[in-house]
Amino acid sequence: MSENSTTDAIVVGAGLAGLVCTLELLRGGHSVLLLDRCRPEEVGGLAREAFGGMFMVDSPEQRRSRIPDSERVALEDWLRVAELDPEDEWPRRWAEQYVTRARDDVGGWLREIGVRFFPVVNWAERGNFGDGNTVPRFHLTWGTGKALVSAVWDAINSHPQRGALDVRFGARVSELVIEHGHAVGARVVGQDSDTAATREAGQDKEGQYKEGQYKEGEYEVRATRAVVVAAGGIGGNLEIVRREWPTERLGDAPRHILMGSHLYADGALHEEVTRVGGNVTHLSRMWNYADAVRHPNPQREHHGLKLIPPRSGIMLNPDGHRYGPVPVMPTYDAYAALERMCEDSRKYSWLICNWKIAKRELDVSGSQHNPHLREKRRVRFLLSVLLGKPNLVRHFLEGSPDFVAATSLDELAVKMNEVSGEEAIDPEVLSAEIGRYDEAIARGKGLFNDDQLRRIGQLRNWRGDRLRTCAFQRIVDAKAMPLLAIRLQPMARKSLGGIQTDLGCRVLRAQDGEPIPGLYAVGEAAGFGGGGVHGKRSLEGTFLGGCVFTGRLAAAAIAGAELPLRTPPRLA
Image 1 (cartoon, helix red, strand yellow):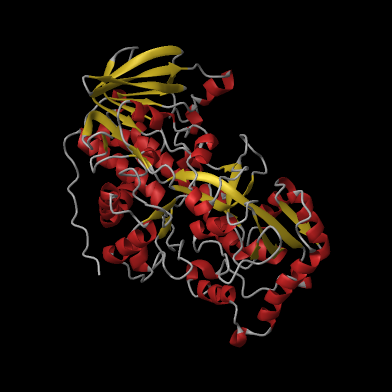
Image 2 (cartoon, one colour; image 1 turned 60 degrees about the horizontal axis):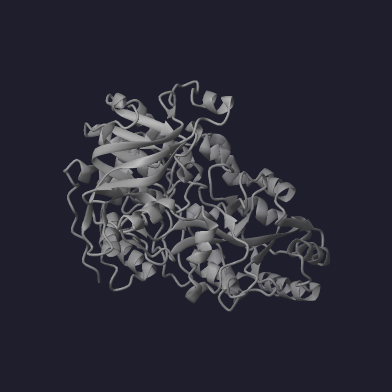
């Protein structure tokens, strides 16, 4: 395609939602121009870095594990957690459609292009009071998010209509072109590849990126049918994150926020959609995490990683006091953990455990630090589940400034204060809090009266957690040394709000709620559907699935063949 030429559809963003939409448009016989600021090896955006969890209901994996799930129960869980406001008509309708169609239109579609899921379904977001996921629904992609992206990208490149696709890397959309109220194109700022190495990366050995182009300078591209915004959320712009921070629930925005989103998810297209009259809603609804640490090998400023912290460790506030009366435990309620952290103006927490606990239970939510799962090394992955991940613990102890180890609680307190830069941890307080927990364990299971221990017992009842959860391990134990302290901080990750769309992913005007002809939004840019399908909180695994779902629905709507709507279940 030459400059100023015309295609059927322009897709802005080569993340998962943009790739799915592109594939479905090609399948529908349409020509597509795919634009992204990334380099060829970065195709897939944040999904490429993701753990790869997928929320599905009544799936084959659930049935084989005899997990009784239903659309009614799942929708009740979703709406309870979402806390949608009465005016959230589109988010509610999107939630109904996603829950009823995720198994077939997301999971089934992905299986058709070669994606496979780990047979044991994980149980995320149970809720502190059983008010989250009623049953396990977190389907882990075999190969993590990298395999998910590769499957879609391979399907694009092997499609018979591949010649109808023009991919442009290093291309930033600066402006949407609207004529007579219709979206007809975009203004693009093109950049040539930065280095010869980058250019070579575009010619990888499999040839899968070789069609990508770099075009320098500013130019205009036009589309006859649609312009699709698939540019991600706002998490890559910490200035916007702080501006939109939900102060009514979390207090003032933290001075220090780690970056866990994609660098290009900077909200620029949200502002551009607003400029042309589109409705952007609920940006204060974010899915930020309270269990992040500084990256051992940072690739960008404020680079953070979301941990899956040990459940057998205990969580303390900045002064070393254990959270209570309801303990803060990872995997139960991510938003509640963030609320507890943000009760203190310093906005960080401590997790205390030991080597034995960390080796068995510590993990990272992402593809980078799960190489055996990412590269589908089945035997090594199973061994890591059985034997733990000692090398991962060493990696963080050696590289992340938020990890410290010690042979005594007194020494640990000194090192914790060195990390925080304040004398907040009193060794006597630390000893008392940990001692009380260890004494509860020493009394034996018949006398457990600590809610965290009851939850650990419940965790070990599910086979997806049993191998990864210690059997009531004391913190101070000569056989489990050294002691570890991990400082956890807030990290910007995903946007729950975004560009408001109808069920055909058409962008709606702020003025009257009517669609802007030719303009569509998908994935995180659209709040994963409707400008905020998750409401105020998420059940996890619903983000990647939302990218697939919105990408497919947008392509169907552009082709004039919308997927048939499903009647949502009647709620109790």
